[in-house]
Structures are given as C-alpha cells and as structure tokens.
Length: 333
Image (cartoon, rainbow, N blue to C red; front, top):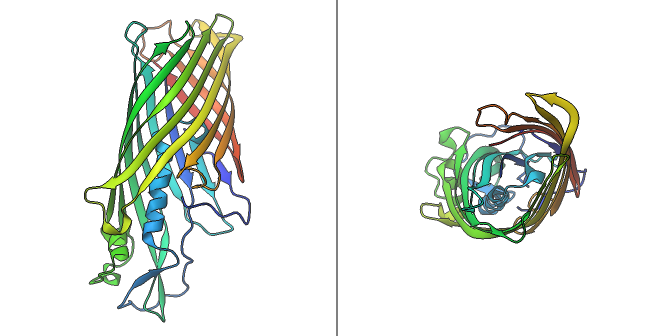
C-alpha cells in the first residue's frame, strides 16, 4: 500500500493517544517545543514540555490500531504543520482466510512496524537543549476463529486474538548529554524498551453473494483487545491500552466487458466505515473514518498460479479534521 496523506485542519490538536490486506498508519502526537540555540552540556537534566510516560502511553494506544485489519487505516499519513508535531509512521501487512466449508477454521495474522520521532527538551533550570529521539515499534497479531454458517451466503465468525509488541527508544544525540543521569524518563529515552502483550477477540458477520454478473462482499466486525506492558518494560513507561472498534466494509465487483488472461477484467467499488472506542478514540484527533474506493481486478485463476486475483485500488479517506487519498494493491489466493 502507498500512504494516504491526511492533513489536519489548522488549530486542531491531536488527542493523546478470504483475501490478503496491507495496513499502513502514520500519525502525529503532541510534543515539547524545540529550544533554540546550542547550549553547553547540562549537568542536571530533566525533561520538560510533557513527560515520557504520557507519550509512550500514546504510542501504546496507537498500537491498538494495528490489532485489527481495517481498510480505513490501510494507508494513513497525518501531518500537522501548524503545531510542528513530529511524524509517526507505521506499516502493517496481514491476511485472513477460512480453510474450507467442510472445516471452517478461520485464521488471520498481521505484522507491523512503526517509527515515532518525538522531541523532548532537557534543562538545568536556566538553559535548554532539544533531545531528538526515535521510538521504533514492532508488533504482531494473530487470530483464530470458526465459521458458523447462518445461510449459504451469511457466516457468523467469532475470533480470538493475541498480540505481542515492543517499543524501543534510541536517543539520537551525543552520549555525554545523558551520562550519569538517574532520571527514569531520560533513561528510557536513551535505551529503554516497552514490551506489551494483548488479548481479546472479535465478532464478525460475513456476507458473500457471488454471481457471474456481479459479486458482493460485506463484513461487519466488532473488536475488543486489551494491551498491557510486561516483563522488561522500563519503569517510566509501564501502562495499558484498549483497542475497541466497530467497522463495516463492503465491496462490489462486476465485469467491465474486457478480458485479460482469458478471464473478465472486473471493476471494483468499495466502501468502509470504522468507529473507534476506548483508548483508540481520539488518539489521532478523530474517532471515526470513512473510505470510498474504486479499482480494477485481474483474474488469473485460469492458470496454475498461487495468486488467483490481483486488485489495484484508489481510496479516498475522510473523517473529522482529516482527508486524503491512497493507492492500494492486494491479492487473493
């Protein structure tokens, strides 16, 4: 997927924080103002303009977005030039499928990587120095469910989900600036980690109506996953967050009248809506997103290849204070 570039309206501050799909998320969080000049090394450093734990908790809250496959955040980039907030970039790849109708075990999984570049300020009471940092996050989520067929085209699917993630901090300044500093905030900025696990589940209704003239897919999903720090997490950044979301996604596919690879070339229309609750609500400055998409689908099922369909999509995503466009690529096996 290629990023959507969403632009926050001036003056709005962000809050605290069976197919294959890709999810990419970029956001911005409140940070300390940058100090001017280059003062000498500080002997008694503290962090001002917001504490580290609040920012790390916000990163954990943003991690809740990666626990659920979601078209509305499939490729998202938010900039707030008016407030000077640094970037938060996140990429997620995943997929889900049901084994067969005779053994309807459903499996899904996602892998995500993100980078958040906040800037803090160290001070000795009279002088200030900016501390540019880099927080790298890696996480993975798996899900296992079972399809209960209500009708020939409608399935009820409960899913159990589990997540593991880690945030690692790298202080990108001279080592001498934080030598011998005992403050736990600065220790986390220097080389701290936040390890988190998550557990919860989802309930899904999946409707599939396939005909030669058209195909309709509709999914309604409710998810609740709890994230909690554990193990070797730095004392300054222990915490928890809840991923709570309701989403609906629909797709229409029909032949264009053209043929490629001895199969009809289809056009695709898509829409999705996601509403976020718990710690996910407002963490990026909005609590719901809507996506409208159009694209083309190439059918390669006539040939002995693993990939049966390939889709190229253009999506317009919008919500409170945000809007943007993305280009997507997906495959079906």
